[in-house]
Length: 240
Ligand SMILES: C[S@@+](CC[C@H](N)C(=O)[O-])C[C@H]1O[C@@H](n2cnc3c(N)ncnc32)[C@H](O)[C@@H]1O
Image (tube, rainbow, N blue to C red; front, side, top):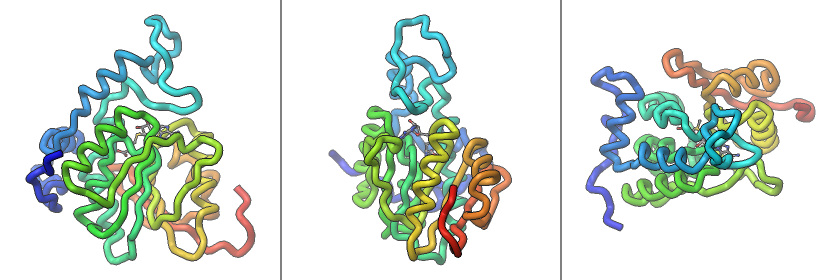
């Protein structure tokens, strides 16, 4: 596959023209060569939309047991590039070697990461095969050899969450599913300092109400709704 003649730099991800973030992201998707709308349309032809409770069209559910968000506007499904950039830029100066995105969509986090932390590895987990395929296609075109999306259901028994410096989580499924993963992350903490970058009402609720004693809020970004947290030092055991 031909590599994209595009050198990624910060200027792509900073929204200098003050466009609406989703519009800015849509333009960048085009520049980067993502076929997001087409991919999402194909998914919707085959699977029931996330907001349809009764299937009147004989379509099947994408995945039993998790939320694949089929039918959601692709620009709502994903975090705008400029918001990802703003959040990751906050971590400049820290040792960031591995970033994991739980429910990676098309892998935008991996692309932005490369401009800020070019040596860092990106691992995305995505349950929808078409998104994973399209995401990896673009990562490959951009020659991002240290970035990869795996087709994995993170809720599967036996899923092993790797050690990382940053975990990115944008409401990938129902609250109990997110809670399950937050527990896994919290148990993953050993000696290294870890960061959690969260977005969405569900995860924000959980961080505020169920995980508050373990995570310290480092930064809240008003416009994007993203929050960055770091794990507090534990004195006793973890009891979530
Ligand atoms: C809200 S999107 C976020 C995409 C990306 N992280 C971003 O911020 O741009 C959540 C993604 O998680 C995926 N997902 C849902 N349940 C999952 C699961 N159990 N395992 C892996 N991915 C999952 C969905 O298919 C969707 O693409």
